[in-house]
Image (cartoon, rainbow, N blue to C red; front, side, top):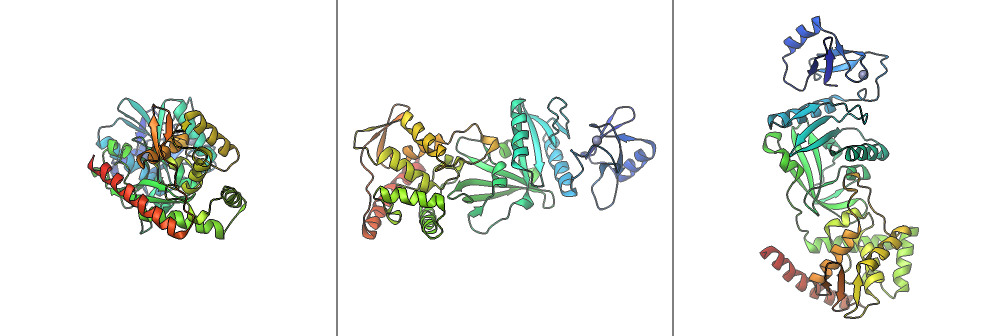
Length: 401
Ligand SMILES: [Zn+2]
């Protein structure tokens, strides 16, 4: 840990730049105590490790500090310095007695109280969620930053993200999701942005790197808006998912395939309107091509032009599929207030832009034309050409605005 209390109750915070000599002289005449348990602690001033306090062997206060690595101490210290250099009121290792939690750094920004947790070791999801929930219930905004070394960078724009990575996912602008990380060795922030998953583990991503003096807190909390995905690449991944599904079919996939066969659909001849990237799809772990097929089957396939799709129907559709575990939401403790229904609505809005639906009022859609289902490879190619034309002009409109 980086903070301790002296005999006369003063706090010593090693987050500041102390010279070794002054700490050596302080150590010779002072005793230090743990701010949490009150036990006596040692001031460690090795040459190769960063200055820190440690409990004596056999101490009882193990929960908070004992497994702190130098990487963690160093990262936490650098993040603290990054904040105070911006004149942001911050407290290192603030212990909140009421909730019995100790964020690495407490800071205040724009009238809000933040609990920064710099996480270097994997922790169980339940503990992560419990801490996050406690912060939220006590008016803290949790800001979890993952240690960079947990992010394996790929050369392409596709990353494999585990459930552990997704715990760190936060949102800034509506529909903008990112994972913040920090590396004390390279001394930079590493942001994984524009995360658009197309399967449980794989997602299109963008990576940005910033040295601490070139990134302000506001830019960390609100990074750039989501980048649009290159449609042909996305469609390639959609096709791959269907191929893999047929090749390596488990019980869930078999159920999905059976349902689409029963509805006279061919998994290889799905229309291009099924399996589109929408921002809030990140809230759903089930691949977009699967959950959108269910949207098609439940809300669109049996409707005729001028029929309506109501909000009530959308909710019932999603609840039913979730209850049957055919659509599974993703575990995202820091954005748990967002409802996966947002993804369904966004998908219908996408179809509206493609001329399939029109929006009626705030909560209702009306069918304009049926989605055309191809019955041969030639027809699928044709539908793809038409889709690309519509989609191309759609992108043009978006880019021009
Ligand atoms: Zn202690």
